[in-house]
Image 1: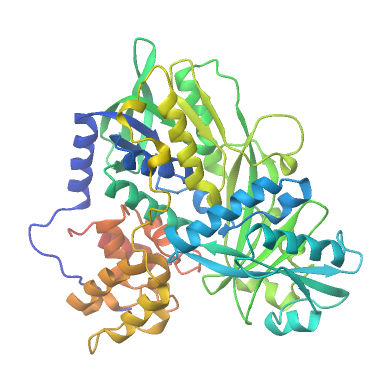
Image 2: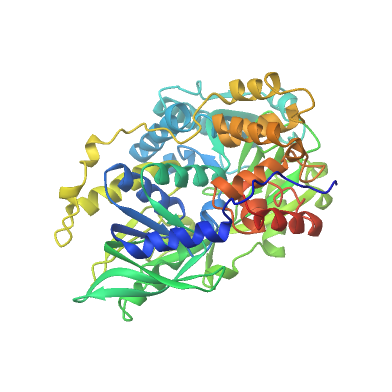
Length: 532
């Protein structure tokens, strides 16, 4: 790889200067709402609260979506398995949110995906039952993704050559969507900031502030430079996911546990054959294992087991990896599952309501509670309905009797429900422009243009502008990946990327592809610490 010398105008600000300015803004004002936690729930609430006219601050101890929210199965779906429990209304609501995201809010980030549900001899479900299930599933989405149906093994194998056809009786077909969860999270943070929110990542809460027994802010420590500061707020929302009870105990040392955790692990493998559809294979009566074409790779998972350790230590173990490969082998041929193809393994924690029974049967619902100091805690939920959850929490904030935020807010029902995320555009049109409009000698090719369009939408044109200004930024970060150096500069200057992991794991796909070599990490760090 060549040595990179991106253009930097003299006198421009550094990351440290921008962070210092943000910390000054956070410390100088009293906010209506301080959101602690920048995952699915925190970003959604911050976005909707800022839209409603509240003065909003949001902080996260790590990176935005740095934990569970970037460790999902990358699906935006109605939840086929919920039909088995009779949750018809829930599936219909999920489908509605899925369609709004895919058509209005984030068509540049949320992509349609055909699913195959293979029916094997001796399997937990028969072809008639699954055929009826996918038809009902598609009916609940108003057949917006076609009609759920059953096709022959031969037709399915033609689209997915890696499909195991031994003892395969039929294949049920239905439609859903998928996304890059980390990219959707970053775009939601951008939307919140464009609506007026002030945000800061890598800022850890070290204590809560109290006035007259009520929580009225938080003391924080910048994990990057060690500086300490505080934020005052009329109301504090605890949206820290697996750490929600840790923060609740800062408010009340005697607070009883409110959640339990389930670990879900995934594997990423290089693809050696075409994958015309995702596969959702029943493992037993209740569980499904996925094999998903994603980011031109293959995503496998997930597990579902109770987790009682430190959330910061969660990772995919050797046992998880073997379980995922064994379960994938029910429907995927061995050559597509060779260990040599594996590039990455990751795990996240589902936040579930406390209660009896196993985690695999626990409801995936959102829990909202108010502590004795008035801090509101919210946990649970899923990506598909993250906007709906944000609106629901905001509605609860408006009705709290001791804070009176409601009189300063536009009514939640009056908010524009289909406000798009930044960069909304047809990704095919964006990719076409990137290729057609490029100047001679500017190195943006089809391999790079398509991921730029599906990760940034129309904002990809801003990245192309960086390359026009400095063609060296069009060089690949790693020769085997699609990302270019302009994306690293853009992540630094516009997407709050502070560390190599922020860039390589969440702003790009380099870590997931197994391309975050020591050389790449060193050079990314150099770009991050260079003045913009």
